[in-house]
Structure formats: C-alpha cells, structure tokens
Amino acid sequence: MSAALQAQDVRVALGGREVLHGVSLRMAAGRWTSVVGPNGAGKSTLLKALSGLLPMQGQVHWFDQPLASIGRRERGRQLSWLGQGEGASDDLRVSDVVMLGRLPFQDWLSPPSALDQQMVASALKATQAWDWRERTLGQLSGGERQRVLLARALAVNAPLMLMDEPLANLDPPHQVDWLEQVHCLLAQGTTVVSVLHEIGMALHADDIVVMREGQLVHHGAGRDAATHTAIESVFDRRIRIHALEGQWVVLPRVA
Image (cartoon, rainbow, N blue to C red; front, side, top):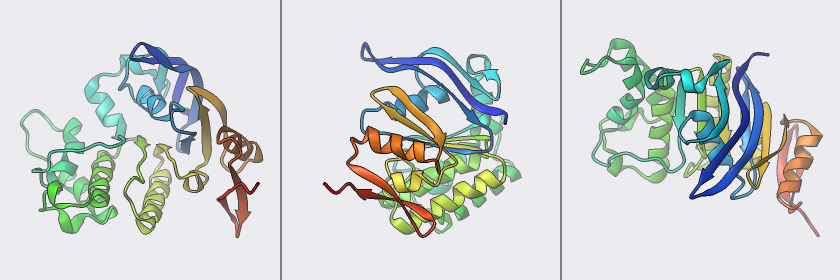
C-alpha cells in the first residue's frame, strides 16, 4: 500500500533536551493509526513533528513528497489538524470557528464560496453542533467546544487528518459518534492518525504505534497479539487486553 506519512530518523528537542529519539515509521494511506503510550512517551511531539508544527531533525514525507518542500497554503489543504487543548476566542461564533478550516481554500479577502458553506454545514451536522452555529464559543461547555473544533478539522476535508486527544471532554455517546466519523473518513479514503489515552478506543484502529520515553516500541495491526503485548508492556503490565464479544477491552491487571 502507498504511504501517506513517512518519518525517517525524526528527532525533536524541547528546552534543550531531546524528547523524540530517532523515530522512523511508515503509515499506509487510507488507514487509521492510533498512537498510544504512557504520559511523557512523546506521542503529541511525534504528531506535531509529522504535521510540521515543530522544528526537528530527520525527514518527514507526505504522500512521498518531502514536507519541507510543501508550502504553507498547500499544507493547509492536505492536512486537517486537531490539537490537544486547542482553543479560539470566546467571542467567535461557532460557524465562524468552523469556517477557519476553509481558509486555505479562499483567496485573500474573498468571501466563502458555496462549497465552503456546504463543507462547514456538513461538518457542523456531523458533530451534532449545527444547532449552536450562531452561538459563541464562550457559551459552550468543554465537550461542546471540542465538537466544534472537531468540526473545524472536518471542514478542511483533507486527505490527512491528525488528531491529538480528540476525545477530551467528550462523554461516552459522543466518543462513539467520533468513532463513527472516523469510519466515514476512512470510507472516503482519508488517512487518520490519532493520539489516544483511551486504549479501548485506540484498539479499534487498523494500526497502532506504541511509544515509550520518546522511542517507537512497536508498530503493528490493532488486532495482533504482539501489539497487545507491547501496549501492556509500556504500561508496566498494569493493564491487560481481553477479547469480549468480538471486541477488545482493557481491564486492570489483577495481582
């Protein structure tokens, strides 16, 4: 399968300390990859490096094209990004926040096109945020804001979608809605990469990247026993992955 994302010996230093240690990986196009690991494993740093948001050493390619050769505007068209703890001005209307995802497709000072309006409306409806479109972010709860930010990312309609902790502040029903949205993205050929703390949800992914202390520990299919073993190992075997009614669930390890 063709690669959507490739990293070769990627290293990132923050505050003078290297926090990502020579990570190399290849993510196939049209698949969902989840990145998991304990706190401080380098998951968010890896995602930002893959998206070009951090200075780094090494090489990153999007669809076989060096990231360094892709201009800012084109990056905005190829990548949908949902960062951890992202926000926007509380005074902005919900519809205007989501329209920000369409800026890479608009000429300077030009009004949104009919396609822009259509993509924004579709994203708001997909995240069940349509009824709030005239409200401001300041009037929303944490979970509602997260759904609006997800709608902004969906509105880009890019071939790559990277999400860092997209389930933050979402209650279980809306986490399930998010999973359904991911499957819709995959059905249209989008490549999805997510950093998740919710291991049970991450196990639904096609592929899983397991990290610890800034290093790649394992990269394999979400259904493989070797992947499950790697996940249990980086969490010091304090959890166990168990099959239940055709799905994988995460349970505490009983001494």
